[in-house]
Amino acid sequence: MSIRCTVESAFFVAWSCLEQSGELGPPDESANFLLDAIEAQIRTGERRQLMLANRAIDAFRAHAAQRHPAGDGRARVG
Image (cartoon, rainbow, N blue to C red; front, top):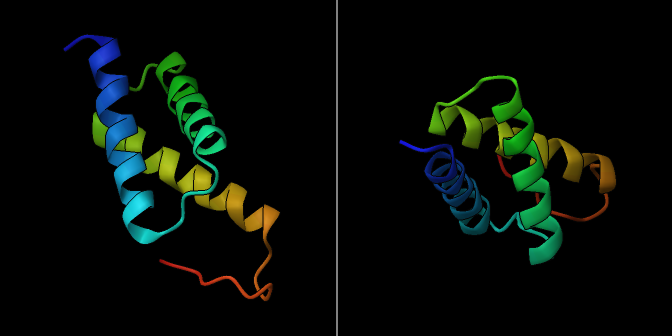
């Protein structure tokens, strides 16, 4: 599978997961963050789609938690 297909698949998995859980923020910002997280992993040699997606999700959630600390009235998932 090409790197392009790997990135697309990992992005779709991550986006779908975050969308279903209601955790996505603004679409442009969320898409850019996920793609940057996946691209950073690709540069280190990671090629497993689910690993790319899961780490991008974890990074997105950590980033969101820093921007919106617990106790601000937002629901937390996971």
